[in-house]
Structure formats: structure tokens, C-alpha cells
Amino acid sequence: MLARVAPMSRSPASLPCRGMRRADPLILSSQPRVLQLFKPASRLALLTNHRQELALKGRLPSHVRESLRFVSTTITPSSKKASENDKVSPYSPPTTGLLSYLPSSVVPYAELIRLDKPVGTYYLFLPCLFSTLLAAPLASPIAPPVTVVSTAAIFFFGALIMRGAGCTINDLWDRNLDKNVARTRLRPLARGALTPKQAVPYLGLQMFSGLALLLQLPAACFWYAVPSLPLVAAYPLAKRVTNYPQFVLGLTFSWGAMVGFPALGIDLLSNNPAFISAACLYSSCVAWTVVYDMIYAYQDIRDDAKAGIKSIALAQEANAKMFLSAVGTLQVGLLAAAGVAVGAGPAYFVGAVGGAASTLGYMIWKVNLSDVVDCWAWFRKGAWFTGGAISTGLAAEYMVRYLSEENEQEKSHP
Image (tube, rainbow, N blue to C red; front, side, top):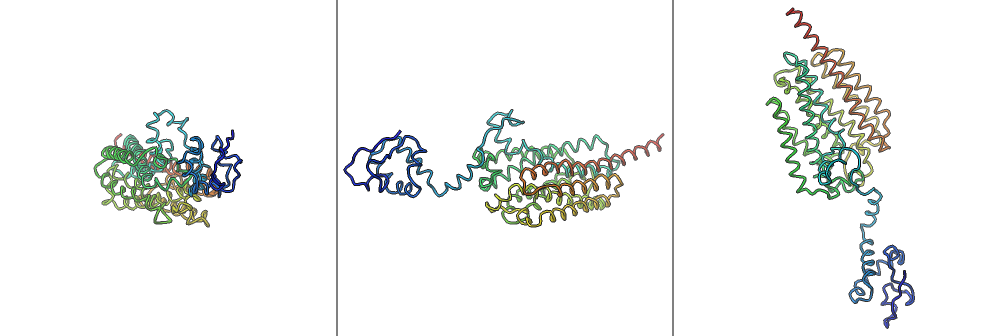
């Protein structure tokens, strides 16, 4: 509905928009029509020259003054940026999956630790599993399966907790950057569902829980695990200073490749073959992290460029497949060296090394780095394909050695 301004003795220049005739419709009952009435330049002139004066003098009805205030909040320098963000769907509470069963007050905390996206936990756990399986045949006597399984279980729950702690630290550092990236703009800290004052005590609880689990392992594990904490805090900062933050992430996520040895009672400092093997396995896992996280980074490559976030995907965009192939080859070579150092048998080289080479090669060949959905799909598959192949080869090598020792003991003690 349109209303007309009552005749006034003042000149046309005193009307809300210069150059309009007295009889022209001015006041509209809905905000969209107010936006349509004036051209952009006229809107800004209206706001800067007349809105405050007329509103103060009470010459416009209250609902129109509210409409004009709406216009004033719309015509701002940041309106273009806001409209770009509006292209991304607004946040909606989870309606499926694990998070949909949680109380609404708990959901932001679960989202903060990526409880609904466990693939990161798998990637943190797998180096721990690799080192446990590689170390088991080196123990004297060979570690029994129940010990290997119980140790791996502690590592899994530790990975679940510490991966959540790492996500919390990352989001605390990146909460302002995340707002500028479509995929991360709805994270709890970025969207304001949680504040740093809420996240920091939550982080403390996670760290305390991780420590409680770590203390279930032999005491030596504490001294091997603690040096990884500065790396956990450093990774978010690396994205600001280097184009290769994935290497820093690799140093962090691969740390468990060394902890499995002391967890089974093997002192790396006094056992030279074990030390060399652990170093090669750790380096192999670092290379693997670079491969899968580079693929992951391609999901955000355009937003990262706009936000000033450094990434290996941006640095190597021109020759991405070649770079991935080179790092993947390095990973496989280091994995083979880890087996050579401890005299591993055919099961290791066929299963773990051969499996890693074939799955990595296939993934690098097939992944479409320009497709966000495909990058996410192959990032998830990498944990199962490559991680599963290496784990299977290591488990087979362990069982061959364990059963061989069992047979020898039976022969010596008939």
C-alpha cells in the first residue's frame, strides 16, 4: 500500500529525495518496496542528507522510519561481502547422524572436535598403529596379540581425544580466517556459537583426558609424546608464514609412528635398527600426510587465496599431480627402508609397501583436483585404501613372525 506525504510549505528540496514531485509516492509499507523506490545513488543521498532530519522532526510514520533504517544497514561498504556470504547456506542444526541425537547445547562442542567427521581421527591413529605393528616382532619375546590390540586401543582413544584438541586449537587460531572460507564459516567459533572463553576450558579438559590415557602406557612414552605438543600449536600459525604448512601438519600427525616402539618396551636410543626403522616410518608418514592433506586443501583453494591463507595446493597448483607423485614415491621408498632396517619379510614388502604404492598411485591418478566433492571423497578413501593396505601388510608380517616363534617354542618344548 502507498501513502502520500501531506502537502508541506517547504520546497521540493526538503523532500526525502531531491528532485521528486510532491505528489509522487514516497512511503511504502514494506522494506523491499523501499529498496526498489530509490536508485542506489539516491538511496545514499537520502540517508546522508535527509533521513536523520526528517525522522527527528517526526514527519515520517514510525514504520517507514524503520524501513529507512533497514535501508541504511543495507547500503554499507560491506554489503557486497555480505551478499557473497549469503550464497552459502545458513547454519542449520544437524538432523541426521550422531550429532542429531545430542542436546542442542552440546552440539557446538561436538562440532568443534569434528565428532561427526572421524576421518581425521583415523589419520592420527594410523601412524600409531603402524609403529605398534612394526615394533611388536622386535619385542623380546614377541608381543602377544592381546598386548598389541590393547596398546592399539589406547592409541585409538588417544587419537580421538587429541585430534579433537588439535581441532580446538586450530579453530581458536583461525576463527577470524574461517569466516572468509565457505567450508569453514559455520564452524562453532567462526559463527559465534562458542566463544574463546568457552573453548579454552574445553581444550583443557581434552588435554587432561589425553594425559590420563597416555599414563596408561609405559612411562617412557610420556617423554616421546610430549615434544609433539608445540607442533600441535604451531600448525595453525604455519598457514600464515609458509606455503607448505602440510609439512608441519605431517610432523604433528605422524608423531605416533615413534611412540609405538616404547609402548611395547623397545628403547629407540639403545636399539639402532629400531631407531632407523622408526625414523624412516615417521618420515614416510610425514610424506603421506602431505599427499592426503594437499588433496584436502584443494577444497578451499579459491577461498584460501582470497583470505590470504597459505597452502601447498596454491604453491603447487601448476604441477599438482607431478608433485603428488614425487611425494608419494618418497613415502613408499621410506616405508620400504623402514622394513629393511628391521629385516622385514615378504609379507611386509608385498602387503605394506606394494599396497601403499598401488593405492597411492591409483588415488593420484583418479582424483579430480578441480572438483571439491571428489577431493573430499579421495581424502576419506585414502585412510582406508592406503592406511588399510599398510596396516594389513604390517599385521601379516607380525603374524608370520609371531606364529613362527610359537612353532619354534613348541619344537623346543615338546
